[in-house]
Image (cartoon, rainbow, N blue to C red; front, side):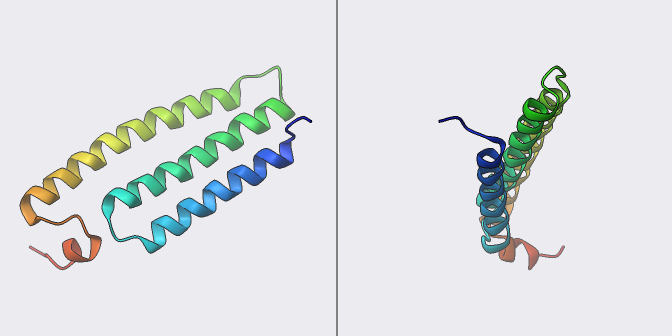
Length: 103
C-alpha cells in the first residue's frame, strides 16, 4: 500500500485546521505560537507533496519549504523573546490580560 497525494493532502488539511482551531480558541501566547507553527508545517507538507507528485525532477517545493522553516525559526525566536518580555513586565502571557494593559 502506497501513500498517495490524497492521503498527504488530508493530513495537511487536518494539521491546518487543527492549527486554525488552536489559534482562534486559545488565549495563551505560547499555544497560539504552536498553532502558527502547525499552520506553517501543513504548508510545508503541501509544498513537498505537490513537488514530488507534479514536478519530481525539480526541487522548487523543497526550497520553498526550507525557506519557510528558516522564517518560522526566526519568527519563533522573536515571538518567544516578546513573550518572555511580556511575562517579566506584566506577569501574564494571556492575550486578554495583555490587551487590557494599554500604556
